[in-house]
Length: 249
Ligand SMILES: Nc1ncnc2c1ncn2[C@@H]1O[C@H](COP(=O)(O)OP(=O)(O)OP(=O)(O)O)[C@@H](O)[C@H]1O
Image (tube, rainbow, N blue to C red):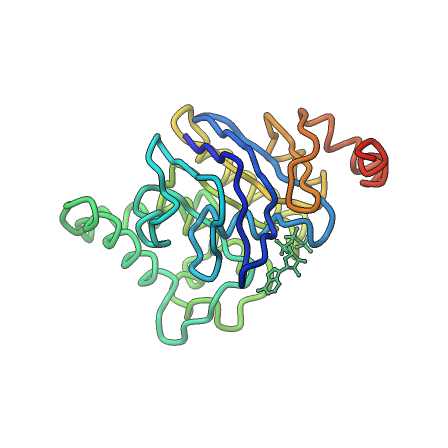
């Protein structure tokens, strides 16, 4: 589904990513871990196509199509979803209206009509129930005065509604209390199928107890320096990153 080959990318002429190789197949969950500043969020942003980032070498393909030149909306329409590290506030636009617009824009890009209102309403109810989201929450202005946990819950609601092929979750565990963490993980797990994939960026092994990864990768200085299974996440939790740095010398 997603193939990243020898990717060098960054900002203002400086490469933060220094030769990333990664393949994510349909049905797989990959976790990216690594010390602060190693390039995890940059990788998420580059895959999602954030405009300030430039690719200087290598390529990214999604479903066998080079997406390196596509803008973020086109990538979203193809089914790539990135949860925002710092969600924007949009006063006057409710959670529900925002997602309705997003869904209909995606349909339009595929040449489909708007989703009928009754179908949309049914889907909103289903997904809100699944994620234990209060109905009152749905009519609030997007992210305005949301607590950290509410922001995350809203992101997962957006993801559940959009049903992306590739969901990239960046720092999803920050600010979540343990119950909210379970709800978020539950949402991700319900989205999981043999046809879609999840890339989850996290600092803590804890989240991976709930969203169980097939592969764990360690990013350091813009490179994937080690890959393994979920056991690697336990090892990192216990030992930190220094032992990997020592292995690399
Ligand atoms: N907009 C920016 N301008 C300048 N430097 C940036 C910018 N965004 C990222 N960087 C730099 O790129 C490097 C990688 O940052 P990135 O946010 O990708 O790391 P990260 O692994 O997600 O870190 P953390 O775990 O702290 O969230 C850092 O040194 C950071 O300072």
